[in-house]
Length: 249
Ligand SMILES: NC(=O)c1ccc[n+]([C@@H]2O[C@H](COP(=O)([O-])OP(=O)(O)OC[C@H]3O[C@@H](n4cnc5c(N)ncnc54)[C@H](OP(=O)(O)O)[C@@H]3O)[C@@H](O)[C@H]2O)c1
Image (cartoon, rainbow, N blue to C red; front, side):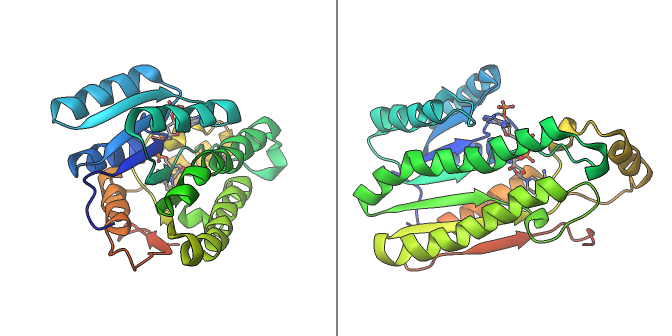
Protein backbone atom coordinates (compact mmCIF):
# COMPACT_ATOMS: atom_id res chain seq x y z
CA UNK A 1 0.00 0.00 0.00
CA UNK A 2 1.94 3.06 -1.13
CA UNK A 3 -1.00 5.37 -1.55
CA UNK A 4 -3.73 6.01 1.01
CA UNK A 5 -6.49 6.64 -1.51
CA UNK A 6 -9.16 3.91 -1.16
CA UNK A 7 -7.74 3.01 2.25
CA UNK A 8 -10.01 2.61 5.26
CA UNK A 9 -8.43 3.30 8.65
CA UNK A 10 -9.73 2.89 12.19
CA UNK A 11 -8.01 5.21 14.65
CA UNK A 12 -8.52 4.69 18.38
CA UNK A 13 -7.86 7.62 20.69
CA UNK A 14 -8.75 9.99 17.84
CA UNK A 15 -10.22 12.68 20.11
CA UNK A 16 -6.88 14.36 20.89
CA UNK A 17 -3.11 14.33 20.48
CA UNK A 18 -1.46 11.78 18.23
CA UNK A 19 -4.72 10.10 17.20
CA UNK A 20 -6.33 13.38 16.16
CA UNK A 21 -3.28 14.48 14.15
CA UNK A 22 -3.09 11.07 12.51
CA UNK A 23 -6.77 11.16 11.56
CA UNK A 24 -6.26 14.54 9.91
CA UNK A 25 -3.20 13.33 8.06
CA UNK A 26 -4.64 10.06 6.79
CA UNK A 27 -7.82 11.81 5.66
CA UNK A 28 -5.77 14.48 3.86
CA UNK A 29 -3.93 11.68 2.07
CA UNK A 30 -7.21 10.20 0.86
CA UNK A 31 -8.07 7.59 3.49
CA UNK A 32 -11.58 7.18 4.89
CA UNK A 33 -11.27 7.26 8.66
CA UNK A 34 -13.31 5.83 11.54
CA UNK A 35 -12.77 8.00 14.60
CA UNK A 36 -12.94 6.18 17.95
CA UNK A 37 -12.67 7.47 21.53
CA UNK A 38 -15.00 8.28 24.41
CA UNK A 39 -15.36 12.09 23.95
CA UNK A 40 -17.96 12.20 21.21
CA UNK A 41 -18.04 16.02 20.96
CA UNK A 42 -14.33 16.08 20.09
CA UNK A 43 -14.83 13.36 17.47
CA UNK A 44 -17.77 15.24 15.90
CA UNK A 45 -15.74 18.39 15.63
CA UNK A 46 -12.82 16.45 14.09
CA UNK A 47 -15.16 14.82 11.57
CA UNK A 48 -16.53 18.28 10.65
CA UNK A 49 -13.00 19.58 10.06
CA UNK A 50 -12.07 16.54 7.96
CA UNK A 51 -15.23 16.84 5.88
CA UNK A 52 -14.71 20.57 5.42
CA UNK A 53 -11.29 19.68 3.93
CA UNK A 54 -13.01 17.27 1.52
CA UNK A 55 -12.20 14.11 3.49
CA UNK A 56 -14.37 11.22 4.62
CA UNK A 57 -14.87 10.28 8.28
CA UNK A 58 -17.31 8.58 10.61
CA UNK A 59 -17.64 9.07 14.36
CA UNK A 60 -17.68 5.94 16.51
CA UNK A 61 -17.93 6.68 20.23
CA UNK A 62 -16.01 3.78 21.78
CA UNK A 63 -14.58 2.82 25.13
CA UNK A 64 -11.77 0.45 24.18
CA UNK A 65 -11.99 -1.35 27.52
CA UNK A 66 -15.37 -2.76 26.41
CA UNK A 67 -14.85 -5.56 23.90
CA UNK A 68 -18.40 -5.32 22.54
CA UNK A 69 -18.03 -1.60 21.84
CA UNK A 70 -14.79 -2.26 19.98
CA UNK A 71 -16.44 -5.01 17.95
CA UNK A 72 -19.24 -2.55 17.12
CA UNK A 73 -16.58 -0.06 15.96
CA UNK A 74 -15.25 -2.63 13.47
CA UNK A 75 -18.77 -3.58 12.36
CA UNK A 76 -19.85 0.03 11.80
CA UNK A 77 -16.65 0.74 9.86
CA UNK A 78 -17.24 -2.27 7.61
CA UNK A 79 -20.87 -1.22 7.05
CA UNK A 80 -19.83 2.32 6.17
CA UNK A 81 -16.77 1.64 4.01
CA UNK A 82 -16.81 -2.07 3.10
CA UNK A 83 -13.24 -2.85 4.21
CA UNK A 84 -10.70 -2.25 6.99
CA UNK A 85 -7.15 -1.72 5.78
CA UNK A 86 -5.49 0.02 8.70
CA UNK A 87 -5.83 0.00 12.46
CA UNK A 88 -4.01 2.73 14.35
CA UNK A 89 -4.11 1.22 17.84
CA UNK A 90 -3.40 4.41 19.71
CA UNK A 91 -5.76 4.92 22.70
CA UNK A 92 -3.75 5.07 25.91
CA UNK A 93 -3.35 6.50 29.40
CA UNK A 94 -0.22 7.41 31.37
CA UNK A 95 -0.99 8.02 35.06
CA UNK A 96 2.62 7.61 36.21
CA UNK A 97 3.15 6.83 39.90
CA UNK A 98 5.73 5.46 42.30
CA UNK A 99 5.05 1.83 43.23
CA UNK A 100 5.26 2.67 46.96
CA UNK A 101 2.28 5.01 46.57
CA UNK A 102 0.07 2.09 45.55
CA UNK A 103 -2.14 3.71 42.88
CA UNK A 104 -3.74 0.35 42.22
CA UNK A 105 -6.82 1.74 40.47
CA UNK A 106 -4.57 3.52 37.99
CA UNK A 107 -2.49 0.36 37.46
CA UNK A 108 -5.68 -1.41 36.55
CA UNK A 109 -6.87 1.40 34.24
CA UNK A 110 -3.58 1.25 32.34
CA UNK A 111 -3.85 -2.51 31.91
CA UNK A 112 -7.48 -2.12 30.79
CA UNK A 113 -6.79 0.59 28.18
CA UNK A 114 -3.14 0.11 27.12
CA UNK A 115 -3.17 -3.70 27.12
CA UNK A 116 -6.73 -5.03 26.90
CA UNK A 117 -7.94 -2.13 24.73
CA UNK A 118 -5.14 -2.80 22.25
CA UNK A 119 -6.06 -6.51 22.14
CA UNK A 120 -9.76 -5.75 21.73
CA UNK A 121 -9.03 -3.64 18.65
CA UNK A 122 -6.78 -6.29 17.12
CA UNK A 123 -9.38 -8.99 17.76
CA UNK A 124 -12.08 -6.87 16.16
CA UNK A 125 -10.23 -6.12 12.90
CA UNK A 126 -8.20 -9.28 12.38
CA UNK A 127 -10.96 -11.47 10.92
CA UNK A 128 -11.56 -8.86 8.20
CA UNK A 129 -7.86 -8.41 7.47
CA UNK A 130 -7.37 -12.20 7.30
CA UNK A 131 -10.26 -12.48 4.87
CA UNK A 132 -8.92 -9.61 2.77
CA UNK A 133 -5.38 -11.10 2.92
CA UNK A 134 -4.29 -7.51 3.42
CA UNK A 135 -3.96 -5.00 6.27
CA UNK A 136 -1.67 -2.91 8.43
CA UNK A 137 -1.80 -2.65 12.22
CA UNK A 138 0.07 0.27 13.77
CA UNK A 139 0.47 -0.25 17.51
CA UNK A 140 1.52 2.82 19.50
CA UNK A 141 4.08 1.76 22.10
CA UNK A 142 6.56 4.31 23.50
CA UNK A 143 10.17 4.93 24.39
CA UNK A 144 8.77 3.72 27.74
CA UNK A 145 8.31 0.38 26.00
CA UNK A 146 12.10 0.13 25.76
CA UNK A 147 13.35 1.94 28.87
CA UNK A 148 11.94 2.64 32.31
CA UNK A 149 12.05 5.91 34.26
CA UNK A 150 10.77 6.99 37.69
CA UNK A 151 7.03 6.36 37.95
CA UNK A 152 6.84 4.32 34.76
CA UNK A 153 6.82 0.77 36.18
CA UNK A 154 3.26 -0.10 35.17
CA UNK A 155 3.05 2.25 32.16
CA UNK A 156 6.32 0.81 30.83
CA UNK A 157 4.97 -2.67 31.52
CA UNK A 158 2.03 -1.96 29.25
CA UNK A 159 4.21 -0.44 26.52
CA UNK A 160 6.78 -3.28 26.69
CA UNK A 161 3.76 -5.54 26.21
CA UNK A 162 2.68 -3.64 23.09
CA UNK A 163 6.17 -3.92 21.62
CA UNK A 164 6.45 -7.66 22.32
CA UNK A 165 2.97 -8.21 20.95
CA UNK A 166 3.83 -6.29 17.79
CA UNK A 167 7.01 -8.28 17.18
CA UNK A 168 5.27 -11.64 17.36
CA UNK A 169 2.20 -10.41 15.48
CA UNK A 170 4.38 -9.26 12.62
CA UNK A 171 6.14 -12.60 12.45
CA UNK A 172 2.89 -14.55 12.44
CA UNK A 173 0.80 -12.31 10.20
CA UNK A 174 3.01 -10.56 7.67
CA UNK A 175 4.74 -13.46 5.88
CA UNK A 176 1.67 -15.65 5.55
CA UNK A 177 -1.27 -13.22 5.49
CA UNK A 178 0.12 -9.98 4.06
CA UNK A 179 -0.87 -8.16 7.24
CA UNK A 180 1.87 -5.70 8.13
CA UNK A 181 2.50 -4.70 11.74
CA UNK A 182 4.43 -1.69 13.01
CA UNK A 183 5.30 -0.61 16.53
CA UNK A 184 5.74 3.15 16.86
CA UNK A 185 7.69 4.23 19.94
CA UNK A 186 7.60 7.99 20.52
CA UNK A 187 9.56 9.97 23.08
CA UNK A 188 7.95 13.09 24.54
CA UNK A 189 5.10 14.49 22.47
CA UNK A 190 3.17 17.58 23.54
CA UNK A 191 -0.34 16.22 24.19
CA UNK A 192 -2.90 15.85 26.99
CA UNK A 193 -1.31 12.54 28.06
CA UNK A 194 0.25 13.76 31.36
CA UNK A 195 -3.15 15.09 32.50
CA UNK A 196 -3.99 11.70 34.02
CA UNK A 197 -1.06 11.86 36.49
CA UNK A 198 -2.31 12.22 40.08
CA UNK A 199 0.71 11.02 42.10
CA UNK A 200 1.98 14.07 43.98
CA UNK A 201 5.58 12.75 44.04
CA UNK A 202 5.59 12.47 40.25
CA UNK A 203 3.90 15.85 39.78
CA UNK A 204 6.56 17.46 41.99
CA UNK A 205 9.34 15.67 40.08
CA UNK A 206 7.90 16.87 36.78
CA UNK A 207 7.61 20.43 38.06
CA UNK A 208 11.18 20.47 39.37
CA UNK A 209 12.54 18.84 36.23
CA UNK A 210 10.63 21.15 33.93
CA UNK A 211 13.01 22.53 31.34
CA UNK A 212 12.78 24.17 27.99
CA UNK A 213 13.21 20.99 25.95
CA UNK A 214 11.45 21.20 22.63
CA UNK A 215 8.98 18.32 22.62
CA UNK A 216 7.67 16.68 19.47
CA UNK A 217 4.24 17.66 18.17
CA UNK A 218 1.49 15.11 17.40
CA UNK A 219 2.00 15.87 13.69
CA UNK A 220 5.59 14.56 13.98
CA UNK A 221 4.19 11.16 14.92
CA UNK A 222 1.53 11.41 12.20
CA UNK A 223 4.50 11.80 9.80
CA UNK A 224 6.02 8.61 11.19
CA UNK A 225 2.77 6.68 10.87
CA UNK A 226 2.30 7.92 7.32
CA UNK A 227 5.86 6.80 6.49
CA UNK A 228 5.19 3.26 7.74
CA UNK A 229 1.82 3.03 6.00
CA UNK A 230 3.07 4.27 2.65
CA UNK A 231 6.16 2.07 2.47
CA UNK A 232 6.08 -0.15 -0.62
CA UNK A 233 3.90 -3.24 -0.23
CA UNK A 234 6.96 -5.52 0.12
CA UNK A 235 8.38 -3.44 3.01
CA UNK A 236 7.16 -3.80 6.59
CA UNK A 237 8.54 -1.15 8.93
CA UNK A 238 8.64 -3.29 12.07
CA UNK A 239 9.39 -0.59 14.63
CA UNK A 240 10.31 3.07 14.88
CA UNK A 241 11.70 4.82 17.96
CA UNK A 242 11.28 8.55 17.46
CA UNK A 243 12.75 10.99 19.99
CA UNK A 244 12.84 14.75 20.44
CA UNK A 245 16.37 15.77 19.49
CA UNK A 246 16.93 17.30 22.92
CA UNK A 247 15.50 14.40 24.97
CA UNK A 248 17.93 12.17 26.85
CA UNK A 249 17.08 8.63 27.83
N1 LIG B 1 2.51 12.05 24.39
C1 LIG B 1 3.60 11.31 24.50
O1 LIG B 1 4.68 11.82 24.92
C2 LIG B 1 3.59 9.87 24.10
C3 LIG B 1 4.82 9.21 24.01
C4 LIG B 1 4.83 7.85 23.68
C5 LIG B 1 3.64 7.19 23.46
N2 LIG B 1 2.46 7.85 23.57
C6 LIG B 1 1.22 7.09 23.34
O2 LIG B 1 0.47 7.71 22.33
C7 LIG B 1 -0.90 7.35 22.48
C8 LIG B 1 -1.77 8.59 22.33
O3 LIG B 1 -1.51 9.47 23.40
P1 LIG B 1 -1.41 11.05 23.24
O4 LIG B 1 -0.05 11.44 23.65
O5 LIG B 1 -1.93 11.48 21.95
O6 LIG B 1 -2.35 11.51 24.46
P2 LIG B 1 -3.85 12.05 24.53
O7 LIG B 1 -3.98 13.31 23.77
O8 LIG B 1 -4.20 12.04 25.98
O9 LIG B 1 -4.68 10.92 23.75
C9 LIG B 1 -5.09 9.74 24.37
C10 LIG B 1 -6.29 9.22 23.59
O10 LIG B 1 -6.68 7.97 24.15
C11 LIG B 1 -8.09 7.98 24.27
N3 LIG B 1 -8.55 7.07 25.32
C12 LIG B 1 -8.17 7.01 26.60
N4 LIG B 1 -8.88 6.07 27.24
C13 LIG B 1 -9.73 5.53 26.33
C14 LIG B 1 -10.73 4.54 26.40
N5 LIG B 1 -11.01 3.87 27.52
N6 LIG B 1 -11.41 4.24 25.27
C15 LIG B 1 -11.14 4.90 24.11
N7 LIG B 1 -10.21 5.84 23.99
C16 LIG B 1 -9.52 6.16 25.11
C17 LIG B 1 -8.43 9.42 24.60
O11 LIG B 1 -9.78 9.70 24.21
P3 LIG B 1 -11.05 9.84 25.19
O12 LIG B 1 -10.55 10.39 26.49
O13 LIG B 1 -11.94 10.78 24.44
O14 LIG B 1 -11.62 8.47 25.29
C18 LIG B 1 -7.48 10.16 23.68
O15 LIG B 1 -8.04 10.32 22.42
C19 LIG B 1 -1.01 6.66 23.84
O16 LIG B 1 -1.06 5.26 23.64
C20 LIG B 1 0.29 7.03 24.53
O17 LIG B 1 0.67 6.08 25.49
C21 LIG B 1 2.40 9.18 23.86
